[in-house]
Every structure is written in structure tokens, then in C-alpha cells.
Image (tube, rainbow, N blue to C red; front, side, top):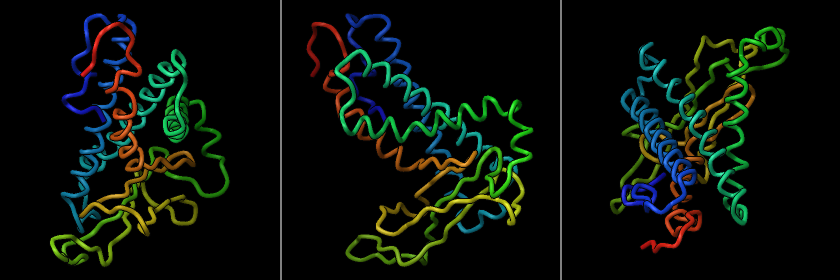
Amino acid sequence: MVPENSILRKLPIVIDAAQRLRLEALTFSSDTLAYAFSQIRSITESYGSKIASISLHDRIALFSHCWTYVNELHATRLLLTSFFKEGSGPGPNQSAFLERAKIATILRNKITHLNQNIGNLSQAKGPSAPIFGALSYFYVGENDYNQIDGTPIVKRGKLVTLNSRSMYFQNTLISFPNPLARDIHIPVSLFQFTAFGQILYIEDIVKELIRLPHRGFDRGDLLEGDYEID
């Protein structure tokens, strides 16, 4: 995400107008992604082990945030791609991020053309995720970890999935995160969103986005003009 003291929040006035608009759009999308993720985490954390009793209002909010995340990740990918087309191209890490974020573009296209594809979806064979998706994550309760020298050590946890519609176990596709050898945030983490046969690893993308601004943007690699950047 974009730090509060980033050059992207105080752009030099000499930047080309089109470049400035792209950078402002990129910052807005990044901020919206951060907000959507924080709300997903906040809602699931507030319910804790009682997530099965989530209210309809909060369930709707969760999936609204998931689709906001999809839309803004798609926008971020397009903006970054436009920057790289004008420069020397993306590096290995940036290319890997753009490839991983491609799922957001696929999901956005699927939901945009939902009405045209209702017939095909209704006739599809095999397992499928709810049209508006399923959100899965790993939950660690108060008794599921120990404090050793001030460091929480997770002993166990629960895999949770929430669906945007009723569950049909005979043909519903769900995916769960694998907590083995993963960084776990207590009490909720490892969020992933499944829709239209695609899995978007929300938390992995967030971690990548946090590192991304430090791989060029704050050094001015994508900014044009004769000026100094501290």
C-alpha cells in the first residue's frame, strides 16, 4: 500500500498531467484496497468463534468489500501496466505481481457479464462456487496459542468459510487456506476469495502491495521530470 509519507501523496508540480492522474488513481485504488481488507479483517475478527451467527448486514458488507477489493485490484493492475509500458518494463517481482493480480481482471469480467452468462452458469456441470463468491480464512482463538517469551505460538486453529448464498454440499466448490508454514496473524488471517472457479489470495496480494511502493515508486523510477526526490 502507499505510506502516508510517500512521494505519491505529495507529487511535484512539474509532473506531466497524464502521469499525475495515473499516480493519483493508483494511490486511490491502493487506499481503497487497504480499506476493504481492513474491513474484511475487522468484521471477521469481531465475530471470532461465533462467525456462524453473522448478521445478514455484515455478510453483505463482507462480500461488498471482497468485490470492492476485486475492482480496485483490477484498476491497480491496469495502472501499473500502463506505467511499465512507458518505461523499461516490469522487473521479475513486478511481473509476478501483475500475473497474480490477473485473477482480479478475470473476476471483474465475469461479474460484469453475469447477466449474459446466467444460462451457461445454470447449466454448468460439476462443483461451482456461489456466484458472488465464498470467503475463507484461518481463525485462532484465545486458547489456540501460547505466549513464549512474549511471542505467540499457534497450537491450532479453525478453517472458516462464508458463502454469499446457501451451501449445497453436493455441488459447491469451496477452498480453504493451508496454514502450514505460513505467517499467521492472530486471530484471523490467510484470507482467500473464491468465485467463478478462481481463487484470489487476498492476504498474499496485500503483502505484495505493501512491498510494491518500495520497489520503485518512492525512488521515483516511475516519475518523469527534472526534479529531486528525497
